[in-house]
Image (cartoon, rainbow, N blue to C red):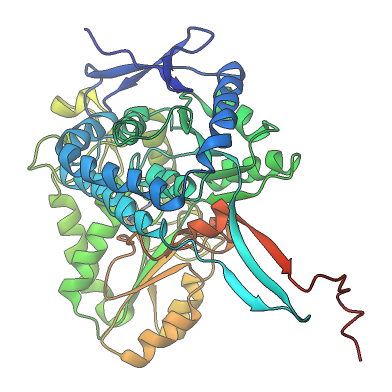
Length: 496
Ligand code: UN1
């Protein structure tokens, strides 16, 4: 089979890995379909990319921010034109269904238009000085060369959450896409280049975390790292980055709860739970992985939910009638299977699914059945650990207060949802749920780009993407301008 060969982008040139090594990008719905070959980069490639980014920073930081933003605006318009093709490429490389990959490209378009507006803001502050004839202000400065390490589940949206705010702020970037999904980053960066981005401002080094990711995190000329991935790898990234005092923005795992109270609109809660649990084949950090049911509706909800999960059509995401695509690779279906075993051993009941699909059309890919585990209690591992697959647990509770307690009883804190018609309980939940995102009468997935995105506890380290990303990609400079023509000593000359 013939397939295209892609290279790294370094200083405006498309180059193979210095070692000549490559990695194949394979369609998880059909292993005969090879999307392309990509460089397996290592420290040597990272060094070159960082040097190119450092060189480009000298001029990019001086381009006025509104001009930098115009490139993002043009890129957004080009992405609109290329949306269908990029969505198809994305479905081929990571499996999620076309409706969702179109949504992923749309999220990058939204981000481009949102961040382009920031070019004419990047607001600082002015404040009075304590001394006469002295002016005081704080201004945002770019950080320098930033390293971006991005995941496979939102292969264009999440890179755009990082690249666009970094660029409008005047930074230059080296991005390492996930090993499974480089083509979406190539498509995104090629679009930026076509929109007028100068050479060296964004550089791509594709490859593995151990080959290219670590070198980026440890490079002394990289001034900040933005990472999305698992909490395990995130902890590693933070520890390694600490050696060179790099700020690190970490966006990591979730174990997101949807709570359904007895008074909820049950149809709505079922729709939300099905979409939240099995959208993107459960492979979102915002995916619903625990459904907390109040006793009065639990039996009815469970019966109906299992029936709907069983009816989902699983297959190649390029087929518009398919509702759930494959998992991204073999190791992910092994994790799903492992957690089904753990759940059963701990006393959970597999109400549907539980297996990889290996027959007929499914035999060429990495498919796993939508799986519902009943009879789960909050101490079981299946209720506490992230699966990142189409496996959801049902837990029951008596009172609203218990539901909040169960929802909060885990290490993660990304997204939460409450279904109720009781406004008092809704606002109490907004106050008490330990999570970066809370939805009322909507599923745990579906964040919009212009709100803060991120979580608490083991989900993040305090930074936010979306509304908040500029804070990470800029550093404050305090500026004092003394126009008194004399030495004025702060804290001394103006003292009583
Ligand atoms: C992720 O799961 O890693 O809110 C990101 C959502 C999407 C982004 C998910 N807009 O589900």
